[in-house]
Amino acid sequence: MKRAAYNKAVDYLLEDPVSHVRKIMDLLDKAAPDDLFPSQRKAFRTAIDSQNNWYQLIMKVLDLNPAVRDALLRTFIVDANLMAWPEQEKNRVKHGCNIPWAVLMDPTSACNLHCTGCWAAEYGHNLNLSYDELDAIIRQGKELGTHVYIYTGGEPLVRKRDLIRLCEAHPDCAFLSFTNGTLIDEEFCQEMIRVKNFVPAISAEGDEAATDGRRGAGTYAKVDAAMDLLASHGLPFGVSICYTHDNAHSVASDAYFDWLTDKGALFAWIFTYMPVGKGAPTELMPTPDDRKLLYHFNRRVRAEKPILTLDFQHDGEFVGGCIAGGRRYLHINAAGDVEPCVFIHYSNANIREQPLLECLKSPLFMAYYEGQPFNDNLLRPCPMLENPDRLEEMVEKSGARGTDLVETESAHDLAEKCRPAARAWAPEAERLWTNGADKRAPYRARQFCGMAETDKAKFARLGRTMHGAFDPDRPVDEMALEPALADELRCALDEGALLSQADAAVTEQAAGGAAERAEKAADEVTA
Image (cartoon, rainbow, N blue to C red; front, top):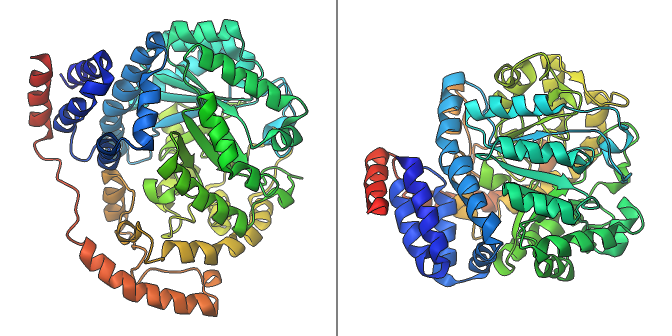
């Protein structure tokens, strides 16, 4: 009944997007449980009412090739989110472990480029997950409620025929692929139009000099041409951005993001460079100034430009900290190793030896489950880049082995590389997190900032206490407490006490009666 209501609602929207978009939000609010993406639904309603940059983005999505748009929206909105999320939440409770929203998989280690700082650059061309293995992973994931699958590598489009076959076999799933873009051609665009559930995220890291400097001469021109080709067919695409100390200013520029939006990019996934693998250049790691630049720039982009940006290092407050370890995603490399994160090359499990659910219950994954978030300051989410002691401890206690496909690096050695950057970022993150003048300060004062109902239930079961940004009992890492910052924090706590009191009345609506509302909404849509 719910699926029918949701699909009818999407169909109604697509009949006349401009006229029906407000009505569809009313129907969605009636049909969906109160705790199903409440902040996202509020953001969409605000965008529609104000016709701001987010409204422009919505209209860009609705202006895509109808042959692709209609099916993709139904798949992504209904199958992969509205229907999938409650199933994932149910299984998180049932199995007592993390259940991912998305699974990242490496179809191959092969790549036609050799990018500086990419761990995959040395893997060679010999490792692959077969079509049957990829298909089995997807089937197991769907049993848990996971309907989003993301390809990494290597260069996934080296296996483009198999990726299209998987789209055909699983029309109820949304597929995204990180790609360097150089293998996107007219034939592949026609295949995207035919299957309707594949979206590329093209690696693009600043201007021509920055992109070619990391990825090789002429890459920028090929990326530019691939975007033009996709846009000419009205096909959806986004970009993947890895920012480093060398390209931070190139990435955080209006000219760059205006170029992306003009090209037709709908989203930008922003990753902080990680020194993964022996010999990875640590000088590419962003400085605190680089990170603050991206932090503030990204928030301005969201307020001004019609593109969805996701900054995985600085958006922890929206998702309750680290999302790896299966909490929202996991990674399976081309050798079948099931890793908590695409950047964390340690594992206790291999998909060729264990089913996906058993992998999620392996010692390292359970250490993630019990330890997340790794810091009460959600601007320090990562167990590697901001809390390296936690990563070293989890790997050691779980007995996880290194999964680097070239030369294994111990967790201790990796942590040692990251500790200077962690120490440098800690005080800056603390200043940002406890800034009482920030418009998000009341939100940060909440105990369970950005967390799902199952997260809260887990804390209760484990007897773990969470602290809001201004909680005087919140533990603060000693390395963040330089004398000047300690004074700032005392002032922030005084401000925060007032913020917490003012925010105490702000609570999420209970989910009671959601089923009745959904049934009623379904009747309304059908009528």
